[in-house]
Length: 167
Image 1 (cartoon, helix red, strand yellow):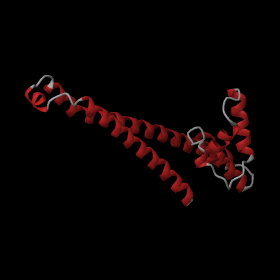
Image 2: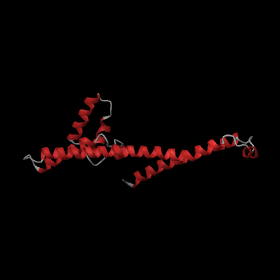
Image 3: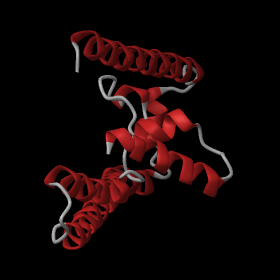
Image 4: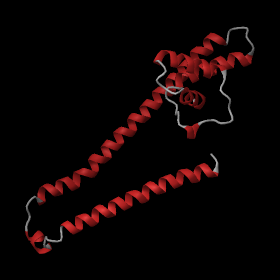
């Protein structure tokens, strides 16, 4: 990753962070203005709903942490399943192609293709992850054509090529 790409990603994150702080500031200011007619002494003397508020304050962080934890575990499990299937697919291709009399480069290419074909559905199709130095090969084009004919051309061919090359 080049320095300009890293700087670009940092600027995007900084802009989002500043925008979220600005929204938080505006909402807090508006809430503060709407609550000016309330008197602090009256709020401190009344305890309506205080017990329920305490339960919410105590439980909410744990609940949000649990949701985030489950989401991350799900994403990691999906990635593990994809990699496990890719290794199984490469081993299956090796058991078929290694005993043949083909040149070693061809056999290794077929094993690599077995792993890539299993993994490319999990790969990123983002332009940020595109491999600009690698020209699309025959296997990439054949896979994209097969997917386009199967799906009716609903996805962009460049997007599919980037996914295959990233895998």
